[in-house]
Length: 293
Image 1: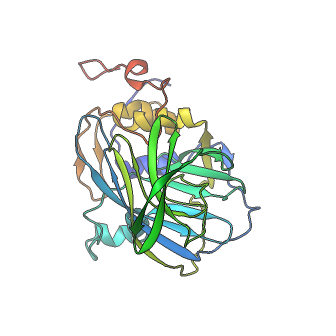
Image 2: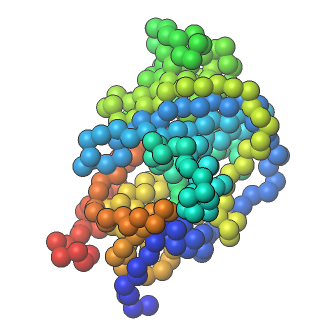
């Protein structure tokens, strides 16, 4: 296929990304429902070029055998997208920006966690058992009214400190964190790039825990290193990202956000939760000064 210029909106990219997938949605998992919901403010530095921390609002829904860590803002926008665009209702989460990263533990497959990045619907799967090696440390604190203990771990290039409570005996936490004898309520990395802070804990309302899928019902599942490369391409080389998530050849020249505002395309270096020394999109996808690859 010859290369052609594609003028594409972000919504179009999301729609196309659901096509040509590889791993079919699994339906054999036992249905599960939320018994506890934990809300976190998530602070993160998204790009190396921008020395600032943005904030997302995420919720950990815990069921009897599974959990999901999802974006509150993305959930609201997905449910009310048309009304927001038509300005019939106001988005109450305007102060938050979402990374569009979500994690599902013990669903759709028991014993594994699935990390999903949207748009593009790319994901990786990790075995839960033994994924984190924790070192219990001296020290105590109080988070959201719960007494907490301290633990540290080094995982895929980052060293983390977390605070967990035995009063909530769930071996779970924000993002991929798990494996401690209590729920993790606060976590931060040693470089000050990421921080999870619990701001609310409440009894679950019984809504279903279920991994999202695109309209095609299937999601691409790769090794973690490959997912990291694709996610970094999203902001470093939009055209390469478009091609690799849709299977179509094209040059992305313009983009718009869901509100219809044009997004300026500037190559930026994404900072991820996990660091892989072999992933170097700057070298592999070298951009010319004239805008062509």
